[in-house]
Length: 123
Image (tube, rainbow, N blue to C red; front, side, top):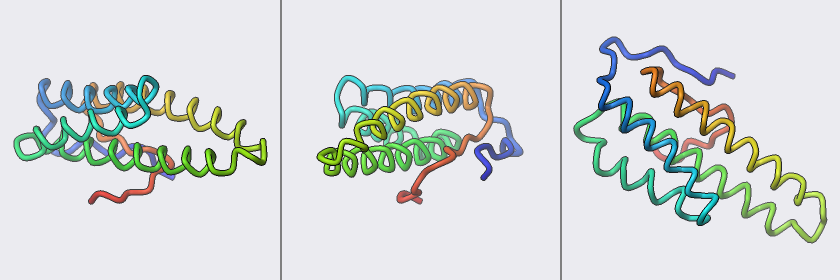
């Protein structure tokens, strides 16, 4: 499974890379408020998607990953009575934290990033 795509022919500007990185990093608000990790990237994506193609692409990617993560956590929450999902919640959160940091670093370098496990709802 490929997690990175080649950078577009025209390299994204410094400003586009910064906004894309902010979009990915704002997902870390999930740790302060569960829904904040979705709202902040959504706002950035909505504000910048028409003027910055790189931000439009990476904003869509991070929103899809946040949806995937929230659904996985909700499923674990429902299954928490079985004890096993408690471990899975920890694995999901550690995975989320690591790949979000990797995504932010890659987009700051101008590389189009794709999360490895992501249900792409927004196209």
